[in-house]
Length: 615
Image 1: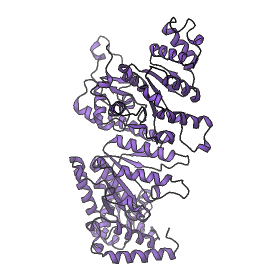
Image 2: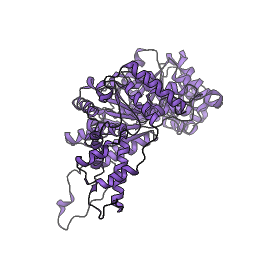
Image 3: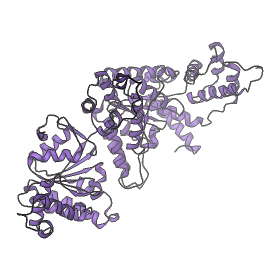
Image 4: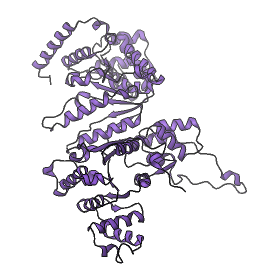
């Protein structure tokens, strides 16, 4: 089989094309590849692991390729490269000729020299010695070298110099010095450093303007489709498109494991005697549900539990009331499905008191829009650099997922502010998150939905249009009809049979002003528990088959709603203050003037401060 010319391959990955062009057109000779660097690469109709792909890419240039992995040592693509390295290291005085070529470098066979060099140097894992060997090769005369450092963050980790060992500090200094060396640059040399997260690598290296940092993204839709067609030849277009969508956010090697494992998962059953034809079967149907479930596990493991993949089972039919809000979100869902990206907001901020259904409605919107959904969890860590690395990992996965709804619950706590003395970590994290959220290329593909009851604790710049174009206020139901709609939605969601006609239910709910959706759900479940337990209300002698008014009436009398009325009122005023459209406000607040709103907010804040409840 002829060797493919990867530098000129029509399907060369974009990140490698960038590296090629920048190396050829500029003075940059040192690069960092970060992100999805441990995946396989599909190029020129073949699947390569990363080291083999780099070897094949550099083959046409006749560079000496040398790899260093702190967990493996030093190695070369083949004995030809090993022999060339042996000659160069002997000539440079790095290693004695007698150890490598007892007959002299001119008379010792190449295989013998390569084997001897591997015995002397191949198992060397210590960065200080391995980097010294690589430097000797980079400085060798008339020998262009491509040096690849795998797991570079373990060779030169980021951190405070006062907490690092001498060898960690000197490794970063050596890598930095290579980028400044005219001798190395003039020798047509190239240094590649591979790391999963850029923030894990020493800042002396990553912030060097003479080092190019290139992100290796998770495979996009076209890459996944080509890969699936390669590993599952003959797959029909509909199934292939479905698999392409389901596998969003996964590495190619993970897709391989899920869709086309190397070993069969089931043994072929013995055929009846004389029926050889029964042994052969057509292509097995792909277990899409199992693939989706396994994908959920993989993504959550990959992100170290920093995200939760959400698969909501409810839609707007399970959401009671909130007519204007559902209308707006239904329109956005239509834009998403039709691909009208310019009409889709960059982000949606849901504001209102607790228990008003913000998270529940956001999940229903995810199902209505057909978007995959993840919930962003706490990514802050006590270790230096870990918080930034965690965030980058999460953002890389989110970007790889493509069309995705990113939910941030209790945003005022999760990203609203950082603790004092965090050495600027919080400001850097928030700045990076803002940058990602306002990227115009994400419009219509990545939608952030943040829920909060205290928007006053969020950074003002975080809430601006371009990050959160739509800000939806949430309130407790305003009248008995809205409360009845919520009660009926709760009954449908929990599959509870009920005999509650409007003429009896509405009067009961008339006096429940201030009850949030969560309170009404608690009432229904309390009444249903009494029914199932056989705890009959006074006057009911026999348990009915369905939930009836006496059970709900007793639950209303028994239930004790929240007593934090001052805080609830303050949160409702904040919701009005943040709302982006008057049409989303209840009728009683449609025409509120800004001056009146600010005055009421100030008075509510004073009341809370007197009660020592304002934080």
